[in-house]
Image 1: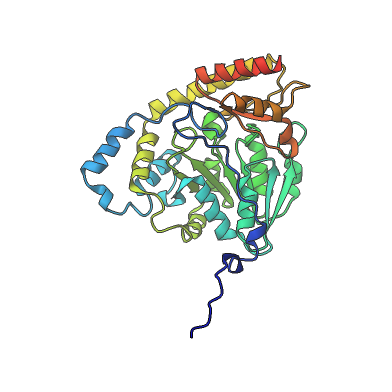
Image 2 (image 1 turned 30 degrees about the horizontal axis):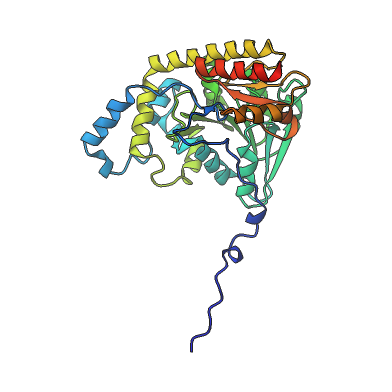
Amino acid sequence: MEPIKKQFDPKEFVRKELPSFSPYTPGEQPGLSTSTIKLNTNENPYPPSPKIKKALEDVIEKGLLRKYPNYHSRKLQELIAKDYDLDPNQILVTNGSDEALRLLFQTFVGPGDVVVAPDPTYSYYPVLTEQMMVGARYKAIPVLANLHFDIETLCKTEGKLLCFAHPNAPTGIEEPKQNLLKLVRSFPGFVLSDEAYIDFTDEGASLIPEIKTNPNLLVSRTFSKSYALAGLRVGYLIGSLETIDWVRKMKDSYNVGILDQVIAETSYTDKEYFLEKRKLVIAERSRLKTNLESLGFTIPESSTNFLFCKPKPGVFPEQLYLSLKDKNILIRYFSYGICKDYIRITIGTKEENDLVFQTIQTLVE
């Protein structure tokens, strides 16, 4: 008679570090067919390039879906490299910029290493630090009272990797470029400038050109925001040839599909359409900011496609978030640190922005 097999319990096999993890918390995602006004996850309110449809039809007609995609996303590498006068091999195309971040952490963050970041900034950085499961430590440096980075303290802090969003999220604030370069040149390890929102500010703000003279600098970008391709998942990481060679060793074999590559390439080359929609977002950002300030809101100057809003005294941010949700308008509320005093509103279309303003007006007056 065979012995009775012990009932299988998965938790007995899970790594001991995992049960205490706090995973990344995304914004609420209602069903795609709902009538909800969704201004909580910084998606672009306008559709992507209309040239995409023809590009996809060509892929299907040529029967390319039966073949593996280019391993390096070579054409996209070359398009980006040409714009910045870089070697294409300095660019690692990834499955969204979040994959770029994960690969960077996997490559360089080891046991006992310290990851440094301003606080608040992108909330995925501490999650990634923990997910390495090597005992790395996350050191958060609080922003100043004016919500800008504490540059002096960051410059004095040691670590293996320094991460920040530029412009920052969730504040929307853009730090002066000379301050960021001071950080890059003083920090003893790698520095990541996460430029998910850089297209919504002045063209000269990016740190990509500074990679040539700062070997410890890396820049990540995404097609999710300014190119309106959040549902696609394409991003990229730029650094020195040597650094990107190391990170590339960690990537999946075919991490970006052929449809993803073609859509990203088409969007990237449709400069006229891109600039037109970018201009609309920036104009709406300014208009909504002015309208909300007329209600007594305090809003720092934004260089992104969202506003970080402190309601007037007597109006509680969490309650305002919940009241808007009851009316099928989603915005973002973070319940920790200085963020608990603010709400974050993604810039929508003119009609959506008017609706959210009018609804807020009825709730706070």
